[in-house]
Amino acid sequence: MKGVLFLCTGNSCRSQMAEGFARRLAPEGVEVHSAGIEPVGVNPRARIVMDEVGIDIGEQRSKDLDAVPLDRIDTLVTLCGDAAERCPTFSGEVERLHWPLRDPAHAQGQEAQVLQAFREVRDGIAARVRSLFPQASL
Image (tube, rainbow, N blue to C red):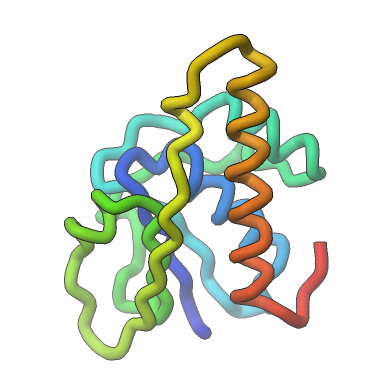
């Protein structure tokens, strides 16, 4: 793998968390990116739950596909149906994976309940990113 892109609609939660885990786990030399079809900014709750597991995504920013070197991507992971359907075409061989995880930004309830929804999605993403880089450990 030379480059991985985590793609979601807003690039605010799921793809940001995936990027954070992958930056920690990817072997040296693997480029890690996230982007959104319609980026809306990084959700502060994503930062909170990633801090809980020792991964700081505070310097990451929400970006669109124009900010990603698509010619260096050989693994594309979509994290929502919208991104999977509206995915760009890539030249060359690109492995496409789809991780259909619910968007924690839509969670409702008291703050503790909303944060729990973010944690559940975070943990699901962590397990999937570990499967991309099985030799690494958190």
